[in-house]
Image (cartoon, rainbow, N blue to C red; front, side, top):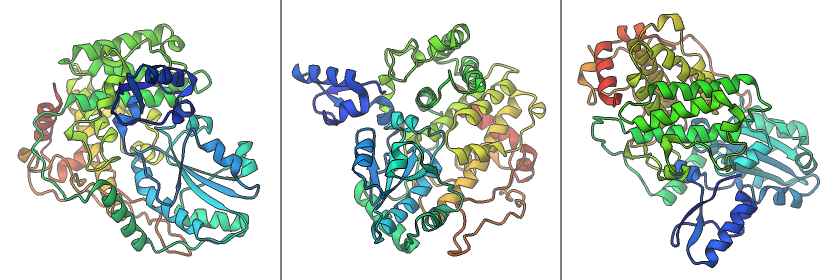
Length: 483
């Protein structure tokens, strides 16, 4: 399913046995021919290299395209397999993985006539496998016995009650009772393992960002398009998906920075192709020879370089894609032609609500107050996206505090900081209005809260009342993102 990428000998390579399993027979033929010539070796596809952040296994078994079916074939008839289908860039996947590993440890220590395996599948690295199991959002948790996996009769689990709900499902359906280890001790162990793998990191001071890096925006756009091509069946899916893709590309045609005219023109050309013959323009599978490449690059492999320092996290999986998307959207709104800001904002919202496959993120983004008729000009469109970004930041800040898994060099805060924009605040921020009294759901046995937090849904006017100087914010956005 995936297009091969080649590098000179000496690069990090997958084995020749992995190549046909992940990338198909054509990739294997090319690999063997090239190795015979002593020219190249196999490496991961561009989008895997660019995103990074694959979750290394601790107690959960790391399964992929080449090992999944083999593992199921070797299972006993009564054995159970639980799988977390995830995307490394997905914030909720990152928050959830420590609990999934905790469940995996408990399952491995449970004595039962049924062997229980808890596993993960990376839907960026192994998108074909996730397509096979019709994974539409991340994380998706699936469970079943051998025969159920073999016949696609598995159960999609409700993640709402966390691993305690999953343990309860296991107990009710099999009689097996797992004892979950202490959460604080387990998270401390995971932190030690992460630091052993990536090194201990301390928070770093960052220089003031004078101009956003357009490469981060383009990298994110390339990855978003690739995710769309790999996860959507436009022939069989809802017609709304087709129109949403046309809208996204058309929005890029209008609003990609004028300083990069090649990229804007390439988006306009792709929009023309989509409108003329949609199914000829969109690749049937992501590794088909493309009729179009963003920015008229020679190959999508040009986007394998990943994100710059502005969007590069302290360790793999942090910042990256989501940071690049915010950069892209702020840049498009700052670059929108006069009077087109509201239309560009509408296109961005349609794109996120249609194609951003972190289900929880998408659902919460949809709750941010939006009245199209109230966004009447470019200034208000820019401010709406800035205010939405800060609401997301506040929610993620609380989640990272809850899970203790934030990036120490990039703590979430209300943005821009006083250091980045002294004129953006009229006074010390007084805080947003208190959210409606919404109690977190609690598991009756363990008393553990559902992994979510309440966040005030504020308007632009609320932000002004809280102490933001909106004229200063608009100037900051233009100075930073208008290229």
